[in-house]
Amino acid sequence: MATEFTVGDDQGWTINFDYEAWAKEKVFWVGDKLVFKYTVGLHNVFKVNGTVFTNCTIPLANEALTTRNDEITLATPGRKWYICGVKDHCANYEQKVAITMVEEWASPAPAPPLPPP
Image 1 (cartoon, helix red, strand yellow):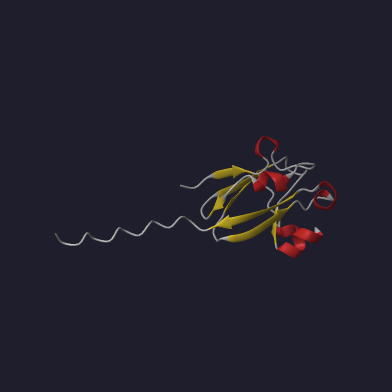
Image 2 (cartoon, helix red, strand yellow):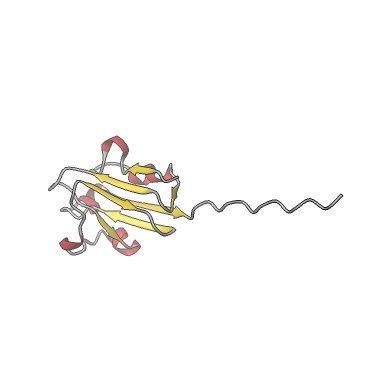
């Protein structure tokens, strides 16, 4: 069953929030959703790679999510990175989040049949 995570919980997607601590407390599975809630014009969301995340390099503006209620369904396991591309929000205000997603739980193998009596 998929879980919907509002990034930053009640604070939403904003500056001066500890997203590293927020993500550390959670387990993200394939099929879960991240929801970025923010005021249009004040923030946006970019899905980036690890290098861009570390350096806070802002991608092209046309790659930004800008709806104020951006939903991202997590489709593949592994590390995922997201940043805000407005002004210096990523570099100076830590408006970035990295998550590690795990695969869905596998169904347990059926028990072997009992030997005949």
